[in-house]
Image (cartoon, rainbow, N blue to C red; front, side, top):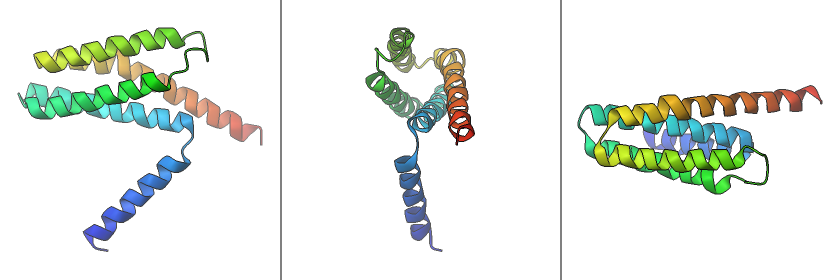
Length: 135
């Protein structure tokens, strides 16, 4: 298999995975990528690679903006609080980017995003267990 064929196969697999993923799975995937972006940005900031840090923080902000835009504020009582947290996170990531502050980036990841990612992952697993248990 040539590398070009492998690349097309990989892209097709990813496209199929996204097209067939449940909303909960997509949410977990977004959080996983958000964590990766923050890890990469922090590493780049520590290495004084502002361009790479900036690219990853901008992508992380785009993910949080997507999470904000898809949040239904009427769906559950915790939604407005989560929206406020997303707004705060966007501001923190922006400040970390401007100041090239790896500690601030790390706090966003460790104190905010990792716990949220874990909570959504657990909720997705419970949802999958509930849907397979009732069949």
